Length: 314
Image (tube, rainbow, N blue to C red; front, top):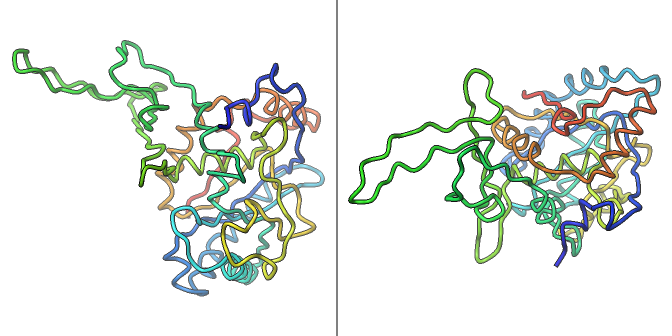
């Protein structure tokens, strides 16, 4: 069984952690469901048509003398299997090109759950730091057992035994409250047919960690991009690498910051993603490398992972 040290490594376990190439910005060109693809090329062109202006705005915010900017697209092959990698990626590339966009990298969502023999999602989950709220009595199991993660204190049960008085209802409370609570309770996984099925927010959290260059396996980067052309991709999703580099001249897949142009229907999911990432303890060596290199380039990079992630919902 893969242990947590395989990806988020302790200093004493693996002294050498290989650094990765980093762009200034990684731009995600949206996310689509199977129904979107079934609507055909026109639906894809409409999507990239709405995205294109904001991609150019985001790219224009990079102030480096020689900006390094890459684009990416994540295909959902985890919750639904449809068509083939060759057909889907070709359709995406053509539709993006019609709006003047180029997809540098395309990734499979299943690659956020497992890469080869590595159970990547479980490894990341093992590095979630549970923060019991004040007054917790252990009645609620930790996220590693329950599969639920919250950003604060849940409302306690009001159920009472037959001989006791009814309990007064107490509202949930956000930990980092600002005037009023915005309480979030996120499902990390459920169980289907005896196997763990990871939630969309959790896989999206792994996706952000990957793009920010914070994942390692025994000191090595996880899921290095494999060069390929759309017409060369396999007919089966499982045969496709977790990350494919379509543009041979692309800047690095991973970056100091990420920017995500998404449909408004993903707003709640990304709120959940930020809740998850705020409680993930990243590999200190990998995180230290990124901060050190940012400083060497004169970049002001936030210490907190979630502060390196930007969004625009269209």
